[in-house]
Length: 69
Image: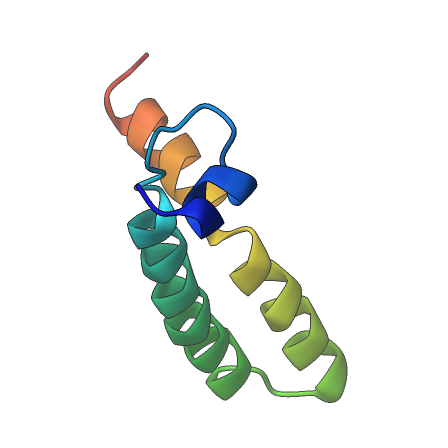
């Protein structure tokens, strides 16, 4: 492990959570394009952008509702 990594991560463990950030980023871009392209007004586009920020919450909610949990 190099000195730069030790400075950033005191525990010495490697953080592999970056792939989740990439997945969320691509999902955000896709959701933003979807919601904004279906917006009829500027206000609806703003709401679509905000929905794109929290799309994982909608996904998990609908999944749990489908599974009756």
